[in-house]
Amino acid sequence: MTTSGAGPSSYLDFSRIHELPLWAQVAVAARLARRMALGWPKLTDAQRQPMLEACDRMVAATRSRFSSDEDHAIFTKAFDHATALGADSLAVTLYYAGDATLAAMRADETSWGDSTAVQSVRKALAAACADAPFGPLQVRASVAADADLLAFACGEDRIERLGALTPHVFGRLLPTNPLNPAFEKPQKIEDLYR
Image 1 (cartoon, rainbow, N blue to C red):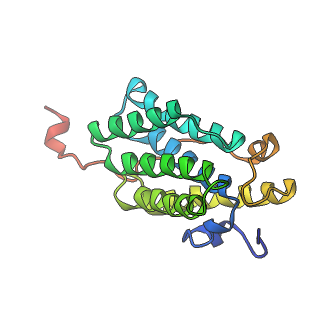
Image 2: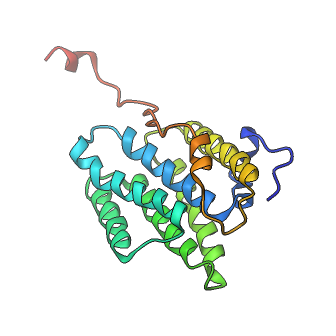
């Protein structure tokens, strides 16, 4: 893994994400999906729960390099739930983060697993920037921070391309705080007093 000259700004355009170990890339996508689910406007805790559970399963897979059929069903349920709530960019981010998790699991067995996972991570990150209620800079900054911390921690632990992430790596990461909506729909002053 090459990290010379790496810093948060080098990950802002997502062009260096592929340099991270594969499971670190999955962790970036899963943590971004979790931040989006936590910060998505006008969702109740009950509505967020299936999405957060899917993100937790994705992150757990980065530690064990394994994801079960039950996990796949939970990923699908989260995608369907976000779609039904009209959170389209969140749904697409969840879909591709889940797809990256499943593809990464197969990277040892097949030649296409690694490249499929990398492409799915990129699509998850692009979906988060495309049409979310969060500004693209906020999304990119959170991804860049995670990617930079993961690059450093994976380098410290000498985690190889297909290596599982260790508790030490997760100990280096910041909490997955919610993203803040970049804007609210403007209200007319008359509507405030009705």
